Amino acid sequence: MEEVLDVYQRPFDPRRPLVTFDEAMKQLVKHTRATIPATPGQPEIIDYEYERNGTGNLFMLFEPLTGRRRVLVTQRRTAIDYAHAIRCLVDEIHPDAEKIVVVQDNLNTHKLASLYQAFPPSEARRLIDKLEIHYTPKHGSWLNMAEIELGVVQRQCLARRIPDFHTLQSEVAAWETTRNTDEVKVHWQFTTTDARIKLKRLYPVIEPIKTKLADH
Image: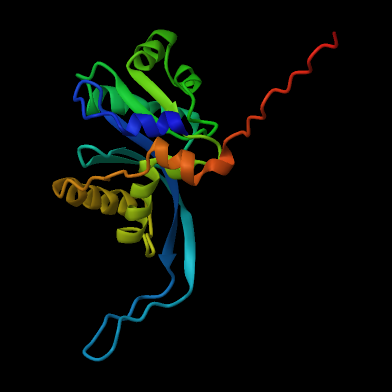
């Protein structure tokens, strides 16, 4: 926990951009009956029945210090998909960075070994050498600022029926453009000092060492 909090206290460095990474699933559902449009004095009427139409996955790559984010919409969330998201980060989003500082959780696919499943060893190694990874602790995903941004896209864009994968892509892309234009950042306030006070229960209790004097 303290490792991630210390990373968040670093000043902005364009050579070592901070990127928080997370993912979320969106269920796709279609209307089974036509929606009745709103009229004066009458709200829109949506039938409660729906038809499941698969799922989509959102990889969120969020830069809290610059207010930039890239949302990669994929049909799956496998180790291979994760590896391709990382290559997008390295080669498309920050190709000129010396190192990319990444904060992410401990999901089983969020491992550097996933890159070796997707690419030849030399390519996997090239990508890994560009990364500085910091993992949030178990049950500590709230420390990942990308999770905050995923909550925002869920409320502002996806809190309704999305019928198919193409619509999911286009709606998320429009949201991303607006959000980036506004350069919405996160001003993180929780520090290591706060953690040692407010989360004192999570730290081990160090008992004093009792020594027994030898009898003379």
